[in-house]
Image 1 (cartoon, rainbow, N blue to C red):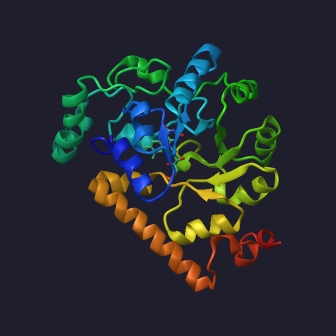
Image 2 (cartoon, rainbow, N blue to C red):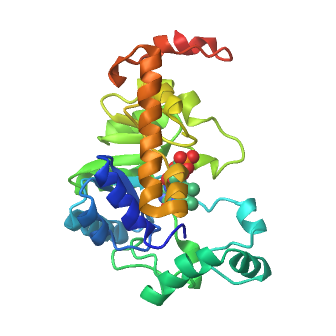
Length: 303
Ligand SMILES: Cc1cc2nc3c(=O)[nH]c(=O)nc-3n(C[C@H](O)[C@H](O)[C@H](O)COP(=O)(O)O)c2cc1C
């Protein structure tokens, strides 16, 4: 959707810059190809509740050599996306007046992204959503792509027993859920509100990070949603995050300028992180802690 071959471009950029990369299950590039481009790719799965399908997915991802299986837990039912509806966008893709007008107004995208993808793949498919591939972009089956309302902690226990690598849960916003994940033996969590793309109102990941970290035991605690500059990253690290993940900044950099855009986005972020550390008088990210923060709206943050 963002750019022709964006999955490959992003995985390669992450490798050049020594970053990890999470490949969405809703991608068009076979997961087996992406791990060859960057061996530090994680697989971000949307799982159904059917154990046979889950096992098939685990086996496929394990066989491909992925070090980390990340389960997106926060989309048990589809979210309402008004902006997408207003723009005439839907899944499966169905031409309508608005989307056709959009395509005409953006010939670069229509020819360079959609056109090239359809020319190469004929019927582009969500190939990583199920053990043996997935539905085409234009197929009505696609409406069912996502998480499941019947997926529970028992499924996580089952997956923990079968998956040999690192297991990460994404979409945690409550300390109670972090504690349960730790008890099950999960290796890490991503504190996330999915980039504020689900609920109209919710606590933000940054607001709840400190409390979640305290409930996470030895798990790695990552965070995403709304990180846009180096200073944002430093705040999360000071609040206890082990890593920060970014979605749209890299997606948009890739959409605008492909490889060069991704390189530029990483360079901007690295420069900002280095500069802000310097301005704080700190030479190592690990030196950051709560003493560097003062939030006037929530004075207890620095306690
Ligand atoms: C276009 C788009 C598609 C997304 N698809 C997925 C997905 O398939 N699986 C997933 O776990 N998260 C998905 N997300 C959420 C991101 O993984 C991430 O949580 C979010 O974008 C982080 O916020 P940020 O974009 O503000 O950095 C998607 C986000 C966007 C913008």
